[in-house]
Length: 113
Length: 113
Image (tube, rainbow over the protein chains, first blue to last red):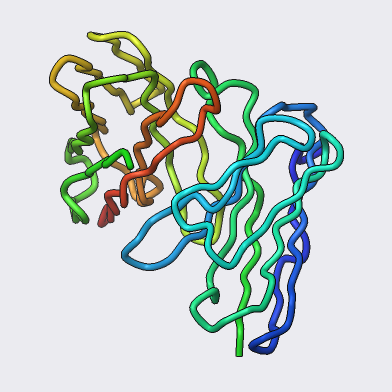
């Protein structure tokens, strides 16, 4: 009943391998976002979606791609993981950020070795 | 890219002290300002969403004010308790159409018993 779940919660992967993180929501919210959290940088937007198959880049999108084939799922893919992508990744959903706060997932801790 | 700045970066207070933090944001093309509370090992949780100049919101001992003309918001905590220890994030909506939030780096509050 969390409304938003991320998987996996933790992952260790090797440099150069592709990695996909999943964000799943049961709230039927239109907007979905992927952020990464790094010390000294706070939360930075990677990609976002404003509807099925409607996505756009955020401020740190290089090396990442996303897909949203249905309302409830928003996938983040690291095409060829690098050590600089070691981070904690948060997914968030929103009905409308003009009136409501985001709801965040629990985060995925990704380590690229 | 929208710049959202928060100060101070960190704050240590004694239990019972009242405290406040500042968030500054570009005042042009303003849509909405969010405040979040982020406890260690958890996800950010929305505190307030404010849109109107002069807006004041309150939740228990925490309150916030908004000045859209000069581009700042204050978060106040009255009578701080150890359970208030957290990072407090503010974020501004970067674009009304997509609702993407641009976050400040946060103010980390430590309340000593």
